[in-house]
Structures are given as structure tokens and as C-alpha cells.
Length: 208
Length: 208
DNA sequence: GGACTCCTCTATCTTAAGGGGGAGCGAACA
DNA sequence: TGTTCGCTCCCCCTTAAGATAGAGGAGTCC
Image (cartoon, rainbow over all chains, first blue to last red; front, side):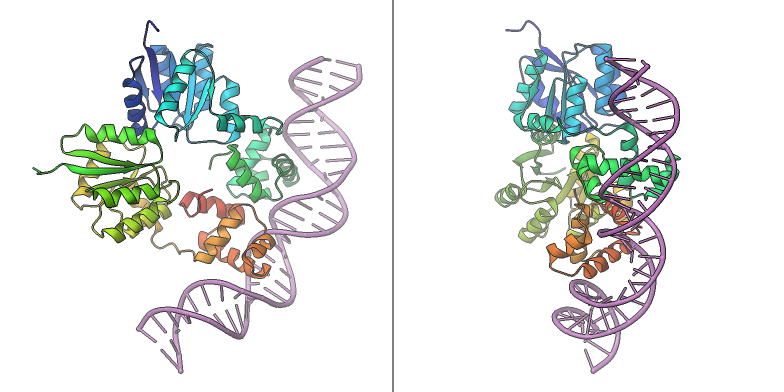
């Protein structure tokens, strides 16, 4: 039996989702929502103010995205318990969050019971990852990482830019742009740039 | 003053979102949630059973997507009042839904008050469209439509297939595939296939 | 029947993309 | 110190992609 209720902060830019989570959490005898944030900056501010037991965090938010919030909050309190709740199931997103130090990762189509289970687990510092999410995180292992420059190029490729255009924007030669694209194709195991974009999108490396 | 409460059905594959909407709706004196669906088929079944005043519908759902549900429900009852509530803000999605006969279109980041306003409007058979959404619907006007065949080709292009591969899958010659791709590029005002994919994704013509 | 759209196919030509090499240079690191 | 890694640039070569221009057949609409 716990002496205190689990104090929860919700961070999601959709009011409907916050209301849904709040309804689910506040129905429980052992937990309560102490604050709600609508963007990344607000999430950090409210974390510092309330120092909750658990933070439920959406990945894509205005002003500052989920990964950045995870980093900042763990700087403030390395023992913070963060549960990611998002629609994105790409292995890169999952891997980034968990390796940054988030304690749990849930998809938004999760049933109520699983959400509560996850919050309770995370509040006790136990990691929570559903089997499908865990599988994706493992998929990511062994796959080569892209360098920052390659991610820059990939982003432009995804916007439909030509090699020449990419070179101009990054102030490099077209040959160098091609070299980067070639490296991207190899790492993503793609034959063409269009396939590379499809793969990268599926894996969560880029968000169009 | 109304004699009856507005009877609402919710259709969304995220339990959290359904709970959030239910909490918001049931707090109001003049409306109530009579049923909740987690996929497209269920949404249609429950509509027939309950004949609600308003149906709040997500666009992307398992089994049958939002547009298909709109079509089917309006076949059952041409006077049905459907309010789309989704994260997708591409002009094609909006245009499709509204031209199929949905009475309203909301984005999921809408504040509580706007959701209630929209439900009340739609229940009285008044269309509800926020200014930004309406602007997108108008943007779609004047833009050329893609034929079914072009959409088939576009989908394969988006998956990263080559012209030769596309031709094989559709049992046409590579030249014909090129003709379709050329038409797609012209209609989407894109220079390369990769840009076409980016534009098509932004507009909601394809969903990766 | 004529006008129209869509799908199909043809051919030629130019340019962009991709494969396969190699190489210099600075920063980080052991 | 030597080694590794990331970024940059260069070469040649083959193939895919895109631009241009045309044409026949099936279907629909008026």
C-alpha cells in the first residue's frame, strides 16, 4: 500500500487526449493529475514546479518535441519517471526515447488498463514496454545510425530536392551531396531516393 | 430550448480520445454519448442500432476508414449529421469528407469549446468548419484531380518503386507507367517523383 | 455522330540519379 | 602516436528518370 497518490503530469497538445487521460487517471484511487501541458516548453516548466512522480509525454508537440523534453527533464532530475505516449511507432523514435532515459513507451491506441499498468510501473521506476514496442526497439539495434549531415541531406531529399539543389542549400558540391545520398541509400538498404524516404519515414527518422 | 438531449456516437480507435470526448460531451446538460466505436465497421453497426443525432468520426481507423464510413452512413440515412475529428489537415482529406456529405470537420488539437460548438452546430444540420480548415478546402478547388489509375501509380511511387517495377505490378508497359508518372508530376506541380510524394503526402492524397 | 476523358502504347532525347572506386583533411580518441 | 570517423571532393560509367510529341481504342456524355 502506498502512502501517497502517484502524482501525474500530462503533456499533449490535444485537449481531447489530455481530458481522456485525466479522466482515466483521476478515476483511480492511487493516482491523480496535478498539471497539464499543451506544448514542450510548458511541460518543462510545469515539471519543475510540481516535481511529479510520473510525466506522461506526447512525442510530437509545438515548440519543443518529446525527445528534447525528455533530455531537459532528465537534466533537471536524473531520476524522473517519463512515460512516452504517442501514435508514432517507428523504431527510431522508440529507440531515441528509451536510450535518452524514458522509462516507458506506449502507443495511443493502448487500452485503458494498459495505460494504468504502465503509469504504475513507471512510478515505481520499473520500465514498461509492450512487446510490440520492445520488438521495434530491438529491430533498431544492429541497424547503422545516420550521421547528422546525412540526416540533413535526408530531410532535403524527403522534401523532393535534387542533388544539385541540396548541394546549393548546404554549400557543398553536387558530388558531395551524391556521396551523402549514396551513404543514406546503403544504410537504409534502399535502391532509390524515393524508397529511402519511404523507409526513413516508416522508421521515424524523418517526419514529413 | 431543446426537448431532448443531443445523442452522440463516438468513433475513434484510440480509447484515450474516446474517453476525452465522452468526458467533454457528458459534462454538458444538452448532450450525451450513447455509444462508442473503435473501428469503422463497428461505427456503422452502432449507427444503425442507435440512430444518433451526431456522429463524431475519426478519419483513420482499422477495418474501414472515415471516408468509407461517411459514404455508408449517408446511404443508410441521407440526413445523418457527421462531424469529422482527425489530425489530418490535408486539403484532399477535407475536400473528400465534406463533398461526401460530412457536415463538419475538426482537427484534434481543437479546444474543448470549439468541439462543443461544432457538435451543436452539426446537430442542427448547420455545417461547421473552422476558418483554417475551410481555407484548405477552398485551396483544393481549382486543383486538378488525379484519376484512379494515377492514384494507383502514385501509391507505388511513394513506396519507392521504379517505373519498371510499377509497370510489372500493374501489368502495363514501362512507357505507360512513365506516362502516368508524368501526368502526376504535372498535376501536382512537382519536378521529381520524390517531390510528388512529398506534395501528395502533404495534401492527403496518400497516407504512408 | 462528335466531343470528351482515360488508359494504353510508341519513339527519341536530355538530364538526373546511382554504383564503384579513391583520396585529403580535421577532430576525437586510445 | 596512430587510428578511426565524418565531411569533403574527384573520377568514370551505367541506368533510371523526365521532357516532348504523337496515336489508337474504349467509354461516356450531349
